[in-house]
Amino acid sequence: MKIINLGTKELASFYVACELFKQMDEYPNSNLGLATGGTMTNVYEHLVSLLKKNQLDVSKITTFNLDEYVGLEPEHNQSYHYYMNQILFNQYPYFNRQNIHIPNGDVSNLDEEVKRYNQIIESEGPIDVQLLGIGENGHIGFNEPGTDFDSETHVVDLTESTIKANSRYFNHESEVPKQAVSMGLQSIIKAERIILLAFGEKKRQAINNLLTQPISEDIPSTILKTHANVEIYVDDAAAPDVD
Ligand code: PGA
Image (cartoon, rainbow, N blue to C red; front, side):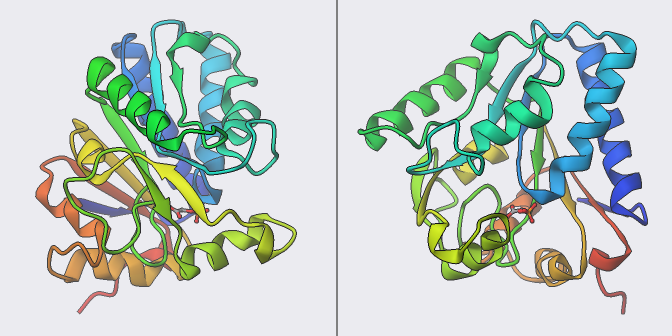
């Protein structure tokens, strides 16, 4: 596991956008695992700019998003469908919509949705590059503390910590959905290369825990220590303590 402090969110986001661009340029059939949240916004902004400037053909790229809230329709402005459309897919509208996969949290039968998403990952994977953020409680995707390391896509009860952290994107904490559909830890760990980003003081403890705590389902991010190809990019504020 490599940890690299690139100083600022801006620089780290540009670096990661370049890495994604290079992957798509060199391997036009790539499978990308995409993440959402405040951490990722600048990455997508830079990526869109690189795609536009170079008019890259993305028609054979396949994308898999990590998660989606239960109960929000895709048009809801806090859904991850909306986020991805606003920030990437509508900005560079040359992705093949058939190849864009995001779990749907707005369905009557969540069990079927979970199966459907697992089958897609199974038949079209593995993921070449997986982007990840990290929760203050160490979650990756929406895999909260205690999630089985063997988990595939599943329905998650969001913890108080996550609901509180994500309330900054909603008008009121009571509006934050209580559940989500998330790619599981086993699905994430199957990716060939994993890039995790963490910015700001609030993520520093999560990064310290990931680096110093034993591998345990109590801290989902520690599963990354079992993977051979993980890079973590941080800014000064999220950089781990040095002894
Ligand atoms: P954030 O979320 O980027 O909005 O901080 C990251 C996460 O919870 O995984």
